[in-house]
Image (cartoon, rainbow, N blue to C red; front, side, top):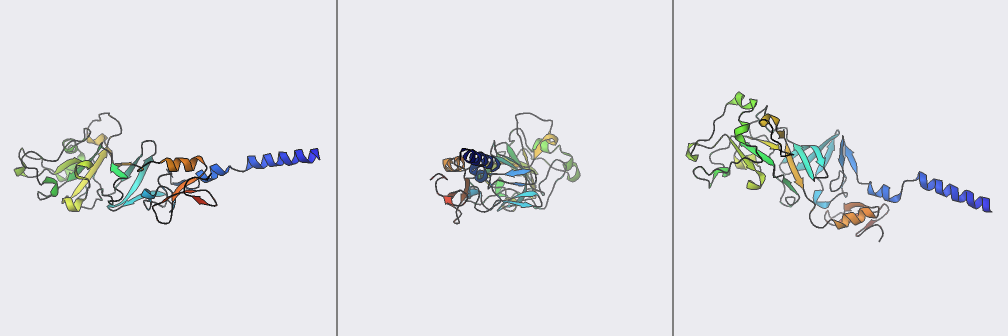
Length: 273
């Protein structure tokens, strides 16, 4: 009897070692990958996983992660979970080597309900190219008081030195606004809240960002793309409590209410309740 009991205990112990814990299984049930990018909370590729404010946002196509909002689709180059930021690429955005005209670029505009969750970072400059004198960008700014500004040391004066400008030529703004708007106007996103080329009557745009307070030699050394800060609104204690009890953070069929997914059941609190 004693030998049989010891054998049963040993087999049970080995079975526990060979089987992943409930907590590990559930905590990773919503995590996924697209190419070499990890997709984790608050993002998700599966409906019902992640934070409800980030639903219907990311799509994986042939191992390429795409970010879709009202202004269009962008390739996701990186998700920085430590600093809560995404780096996006718009194929029709101008860089130091290529100027793309014709208003084909996406710019950056989010739906009103998503606006609290996403904003380009303060060190992200948008350089609007070939804007009409009637553009809303220049209205209400008489004389020399244009809205165009350098952002984190990046602006049109440096951008004009890029090789791409030598292919199309350019003119700089005169000392008075009456001489015509500049061919390039650099603005921070917060200044105008939306980069919409049609509404701003601009032919193209470029976007660059700075990750460190290091000065580089000209616009040729800038990082081109859209650096977006994301924010999970409100108190996120719900998700932390859910994951601490082995659950995965998600939301209900209404697309709003948060749920803790606990394998065979969902909870409105955590997997221990």
